[in-house]
Structures are given as C-alpha cells and as structure tokens.
Image 1 (spheres, rainbow, N blue to C red):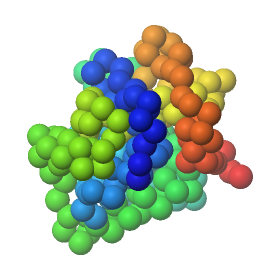
Image 2: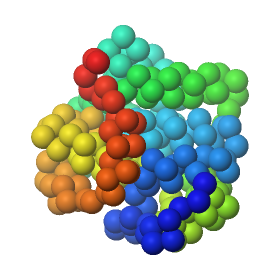
Image 3: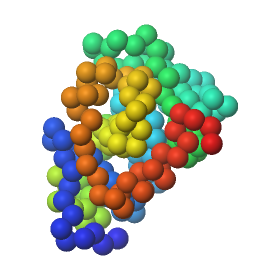
Image 4: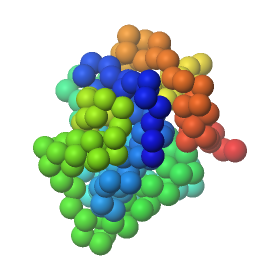
Length: 199
C-alpha cells in the first residue's frame, strides 16, 4: 500500500495512533499469530496483561451480548476505579476475539512486550508507514481504539470510558481533540459500526 507523501504519523505522548489504512498495511507484514493478537488488542482496547489474563478465561466473553466482562483480577491498573469492566465489541470485534481464542487453543503463545515491540517496529518499516516506526508499540492498539471511539462517538464518553477503564478526566485530557483526515474518518466509522449497539 502506498501512502500519500504528505501523510504524517499521529503520535500522542510518544505512542502512535494508527489510521485504519496504516493498520491494514501493517498487518500485511505480520505473521498470523501476531495478526490474531493485534486484532484482539485493537478490537477490545485491552492492555497486554489484560489480554493475557483473558486468554486463560475465555468464559468472560459473552457473544450474545457482544462484550467481555473483565473481573477486577484482570484489570491491570494500580489506581483502577472499576470493580469490573464491560468491554464492548462490534461484530468484527467478536470475530477477532473468537479467532484469538481459537489460536490460543491451538497453542499460540503471546510474546513478551519486548518481542512484540521488535516485530511491530520491523513490520511498520517494511509496510512503509508514514514516519516509519515512530511511536510504534504494543499499547498503540488501545490508544488507537479509544481515539477512534472518541472521534466517532464523542457524545458517548461515559460508555467509552467504562469500556476502556478510564476516568472521564483522562478521557477529556487525552482524547477529546484529535483530528483525522476525512477519508480516515470514513474508514474509522466503518470499523466501529455497531460498537455498543445492535444494528
């Protein structure tokens, strides 16, 4: 995939915020197990330790309600204000979670954060993402999802905060004023279709 020469990386607090096109390009240079992990991270917005815990407790997933119910033992944040957290999903998010679970059952191992960082940085350079591997790291999937949700559904901040496990203050400070190009917004809206609602 070729990117426009004037396209710049979106980086906030040294972490990349991907566009859907950038994510699609990145996946072309990842092996299937990494795609499964990255898809699960992006569709759920979970932190890596939360995803690891979830991989051991797939019973937390509720396909009928299109969500994951994370108990307190899975929520990895020292100053956590949530006793439990409902992670909302789209239909594609459900497919990503189910595929991730299948890969885990087929003995897929989740790599260390450092190993994943190396793979993602290499893939971003090979995919010729704008500004190369600037801001590339495993936590970019979580920050990307919350940025997309806030841009597409800013009026649903309470629901987004609950799903992501953020306080409203964190949401307001970090995610309320991010700009995306019009073509990226169309892709974001398509990616998020049905999030938290049944369409």
